[in-house]
Figure 1 (cartoon, helix red, strand yellow):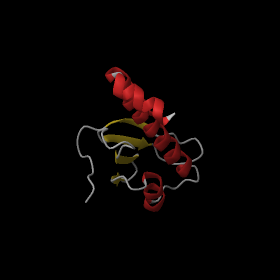
Figure 2 (figure 1 turned 90 degrees about the vertical axis):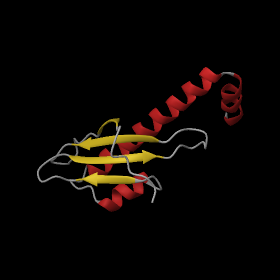
Figure 3 (figure 1 turned 90 degrees about the horizontal axis):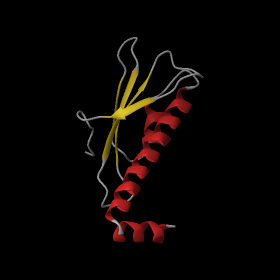
Figure 4 (figure 1 turned 120 degrees about the vertical axis):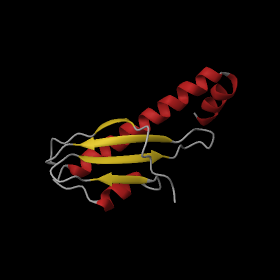
Length: 113
């Protein structure tokens, strides 16, 4: 599979772009699902967010009574792919029905320190 993706990326520039876009989409969807799953018990700790984001830089904002906002700069699996910055919003109260909405973040992206 990896050989095929390399070949497509090497031989077909538009194939490489589609592969990058799909990789980013899958990575963001996975993060959203994991964040929502972690919030099902009614809490979402910094430790849980850190485990989900792994080595990616992230920041969380928890305004009083407002939605939990998490911004993650995802580091791509392949070195030639650009980093992606995504904002995830989880409405409060957190619980079993919590879903994490996401959208590209254009500013306030955390960087590796």
